[in-house]
Length: 142
Image (cartoon, rainbow, N blue to C red):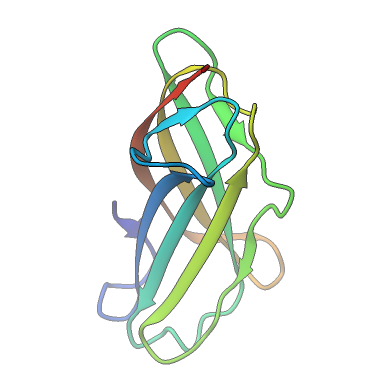
């Protein structure tokens, strides 16, 4: 999914991807027991001539949108995932392992959505943001 920045792509661009997996689980990774801890792995890369000049932080957040009846979930992680930008020579790679404890998600079908926003060095929201829709995840009670 595109990531929006105030710069044209040759100057600064961001790509992002997300996947889910059970801790100590066996394939398939999109069918998860409700009593099993699991995680979202998020990778992103910044490219372009200005990667060495942009400071601030990324704010990463994960959501589960319920397919069918039931509530959507805002997956809150104690780390809150504020990640400092690492200015450097293009490309710059980032990775976050977002843990979700067992019992945090009720049985049902969900769409994983990861959002990432930019925070300026002052902590104020800045003009960059994007999201990625991850896999559909089926949670079941064993």
